[in-house]
Length: 239
Image 1 (spheres, rainbow, N blue to C red):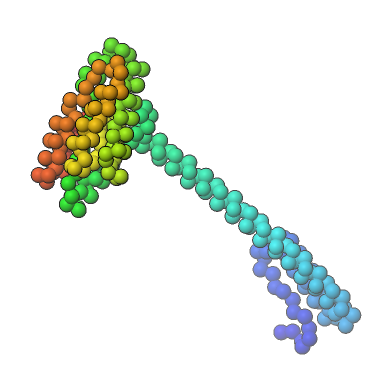
Image 2 (image 1 turned 90 degrees about the vertical axis):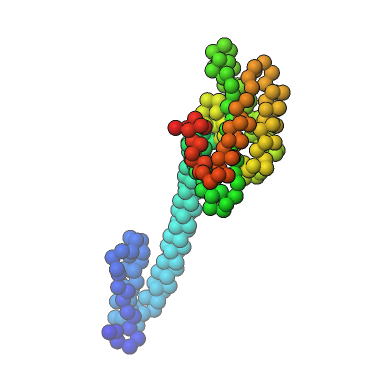
């Protein structure tokens, strides 16, 4: 309770920043002096206005610091998100070809098969394999073999981009084994384009892709019979 006309004191919580606490103490001291005399009231009024102005400055500075700190934290969060996305990309990419690696291929096959079964739509998987690749590596060496693998990756990617569906998937299981997930209406054209383009671009590479068409057809027929694509993990070289 305060007498009529008396200035009340401001109760501190103890959690205020030091500079705010100091200003509150000054105000309480001013209120005490103001209540003792009329002259003190006028001085207290001037002090109160100064304290109010200083408090406004402190609060403004604090608000600016909070905004600045929030912006810095938001920037760090964006950098961390970008770094995590990059790590996730690297974890799912084959270092030689840059295509989705075995881990990503397995996940894509599982997702595609589940979706196709759920929606009752046909699905095709191109299992790309280069015949006599080991013999080629033995004769010409691993650098030449790596270049052949990169050529096949580029050729398959271009074929799918030109003739496939927007949602088709291309992955590198490992070695000379590749996978493309597409639809039955596109698989034969993709297989023929891949073989033709690879033969045209390979230069001195004396290899053929004989197993591609047969494996694709067997998978497509088996899938239409109601089996899951997971049944073909073995034939794709993914035990």
